[in-house]
Length: 399
Image (cartoon, rainbow, N blue to C red; front, side):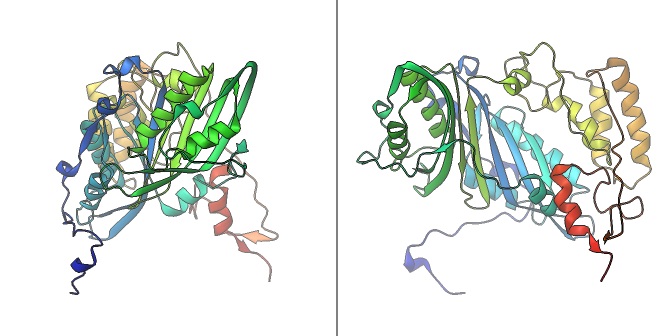
């Protein structure tokens, strides 16, 4: 092995080969906040992490790969240091799991325990993720082409200037946000999106303010919270949201979102009295529908949770946990499904209003290989987000 230590390019890292949740390193949010009580925070929000390097072994020793999305509520006690998160995910590489459901449950348990709040976890197949998370042009006004002179590279909220005589609703974005990791001092690059209603904000001053973070050291989450706090203090908006989408580093990207309030956060924090919402359950595997009602997602009112109902039942949890360990092709899954419904229906934590069959006619004159009961390469009731998967599967019917 060639020794590169003399180059000064970094230190060698020991990667665990077996599952080890102790690798996760939480960092208390209150260290960077003036408020010690999360219920007094001036915003709602969450941090969405995307992991592009998730892998484990199935029961035959065959590697499985997925893209993971992890949603941490901003009210959690702690964030997870990103390198420790990467090392933790790497510890799955040579670990055997019975099913993807078991992997998901393990991730939820460990991350929720480490950060002190329920973390929502979704694992996607690669093609599935590509169809669900397509890249589109941002909405709003891009600030980056404005002709301004900049000489400040540390956060300066006095750069934010507003016109109190003119109230405006505006959407701005910039791809020039750059900060530095407080642990490694490595640069972090991001696009920042600001939705704003209040005294009209000066675009030149806003761009200068965003660029002023260029030599600032802090975690992604704290940078977004400081931006939110500074705009709130200087401009007194009636509505504000700040969302930063950071570039991937080490197979992970971190995307914090903070907002004054919206329908989602009222529902997720338990303040909404009633609402109509589609839960997005699976029509192919009942586990991924019933799992949404597991008590692991329950939080006290005022704390955010990705699944909005606040219902607990130990027997239901036990059955759902067993479903997560059961192969979808196993007939025992249907038995467990009916047992779970016998608990769920008398309690009725949510009132089903509508369920329907999604019927789509197919014409094979020009194209064939449509998804069907005998060829279910995707759910035959596909939607706009999964239509790309359909296009990739179609074949010309004529030469």
